[in-house]
Every structure is written in structure tokens, then in C-alpha cells.
Image: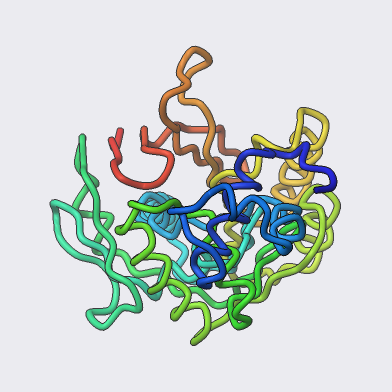
Length: 278
């Protein structure tokens, strides 16, 4: 079945699920499914997901950028964008304890559990997104059925809520497909930041990719951001451990240039189910 060294179990299960979703096999006869002639090709696909509920975690972070900087116009760059759903965060409708944010007819409705509430003053801010671009080694084209099937196949049976959100996000991505660039984030980020416009706040963000970069390429990303921050307004929102000994959830971090230091804004669930605003 070729090289399955990258998460082989997930790739195999994703291939099986793709066959089930398209009616070519059934979970009721796994032995036969494992012998399906199309499985080897499907199981070679790299694992690719795009959890749109993470936008519910990202929104307060972006609003904090607007609050602290006073900026009203954002240019977005997402690292590890997959299908780019989270680049469309301003098109969604959100519910928090302090109120709602976003268009009432938003392309997607998102909420979650607040273990410590998002401040109501943040929800009064409404930055405008002018440009959006994502970088990914293997971006997913959701305007093609193969791309949609690929994302669906890596959501497991029984996760009905995630599948429903994905289907809504697929529709949003087809209506307003963001610009996605194929390539390595450490290599392409310098080019994107070198060409940024001076009349808006550039917001770079990621939700999962840094764990796959390795120390050397992560250091390269930090150096690129530091260099770009010396030349103009820049913000970076990212996920990392909130402390060295914490592994069971994320920290949501923010750094702004010029002159800012990294700040932990919140603790959060990996897939966006809960947030604890600090």
C-alpha cells in the first residue's frame, strides 16, 4: 500500500471511511473493505483536516488584536490553512455568554463552553478583513468533490456535530473560496510578508501546524516574524502549550509588533469545544 509512515492508522481509516461514504463498501464487512482495490490509493493520502470550530477560539484573539492596536482593517495570513475555513472567520456568527458577534445570516453558527468568559468589550469591536491568504503543503480544494470527500473521510463515524459543521463550512468555502498557496510555511512566509501593504494590520495565525514544523523551521518562522515586525504593524496568533508540563489542552498566544512580547490569552480545547479566557 505504499509509504504509510505518516500516521498510517489514520490514513488507513480515512481511506476506509472514504469508501464507506461513497457507498463502495460497508463497515459491516471490514474484511472485504480491506481487500477493496481502491483502498491502497486512498490510504496514501496524507491526513488532512480543517476544524472550523477553532474559529470560535480565534475570534476573541483577533478582537484582542483590534482592541490593543486600534486597527480596524486586517490582512490575514494563515499557516497550515488546509481548506482555509478559518480564514473566513469574519463571515460566521458566534455566540458567547456576553453576547453574539458576526452577521445574523452568517455562513456558519458557532458556540462552545466558556470556562472563563470572553469579555463583552471585545465583542463590540468589528475589524474588517481586507485580504486573506493561506499557506499549506497540500491545500484542499473544497470546490472539487474529491477535496470535500477527503475532509469528510477524516471525521469518524459518530461525530455527527463535527460532520454537520464541516458540511456547512464546505458550503461557505465554495461560496467564498479563500486564496490558498501550496508550499512550505517557513519558505513562503517571508515572501508574503515582504509584499504586505502598509495601510493595514497583518495578522498571521495558525492552529495546528507548528507541531509539525520541527524546531529549525519553527525558529525560521519566528525569525521571519521578528524581521517583518521591525518594518511595520504585525500580529501573530498561535497555539502552543500554555506551560511546559501541560499536554491535555492548548494555550492561545498573541504577540504584536513593534515591541510586544508573547502573551497567553486563553486555555482552550484542541477542537474548539471550550475556552478559558485569561
